[in-house]
Image 1 (cartoon, helix red, strand yellow):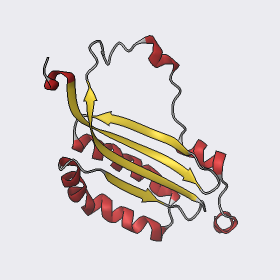
Image 2 (cartoon, rainbow, N blue to C red; image 1 turned 90 degrees about the vertical axis):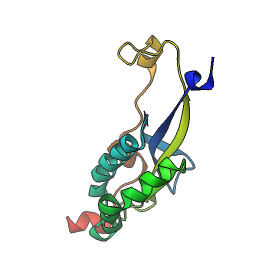
Image 3 (spheres, rainbow, N blue to C red; image 1 turned 90 degrees about the horizontal axis):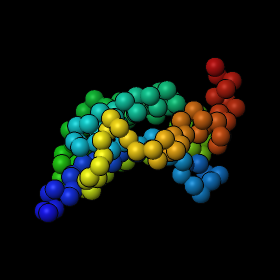
Length: 148
């Protein structure tokens, strides 16, 4: 059997939350996809959802990436180089959200059928949501709460 039959190129994208009070990262979300465009689409959707955590000034470079930085990101991924975005919401001191997309090679599973997953897939617990992860690790800064 050739390597082409045993493996398939693709992309692994994930978002992790890190706090200054913990040594652990919390997996907020992840996806495996076959193309760079699909990985970037997932990243764009995630970044747009997370923008509500950012102040106007913090959101400016994020907007710039959303509207003009993806061409470079797509080129990097196609050159088999990973990309990373780091969000540090000022309303939540000590929190950072790291979004990475990494080119990978997946091993094909002989019996994988996306419509009929094995029983073990039902035992997997979903990763933490952003809101749940933020609530578990920090509270908004007092000055941010007063401005509302």
